[in-house]
Length: 154
Image 1 (spheres, rainbow, N blue to C red):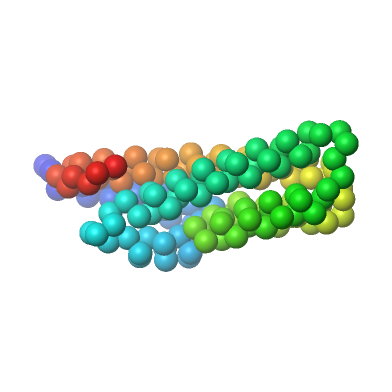
Image 2: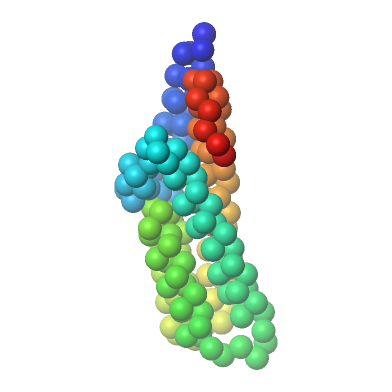
């Protein structure tokens, strides 16, 4: 019975990942990140993704504050924040977040405030979708480890 639960949970994990790849939410960089995880660092992917979320939250907050300022005119600052978000999204395999950041950056290069506001909305939407899906993935992984009787500090 124990093995069945582990197998079912692994199948759920595989289905979720397949769906995220099919939707273009993730790319092969995420697989490379997973390959860096082993017994000596069993929470590596979880830790890296959580650092990404912490840093991304700060960048998104800064972008929102910049764009909410009616006197704002420093579009280069928006571009710098977006470059950081593009780089970190690329490093974890967050393909859709990266792609919408690139489109947002195009609006900032044109000093297009309405385009930037719309770009921010889209980036925030994709970011939150990614965050929700990663949360679901990590919950399934934790359940799988518990069903297998493996105990890692979280």
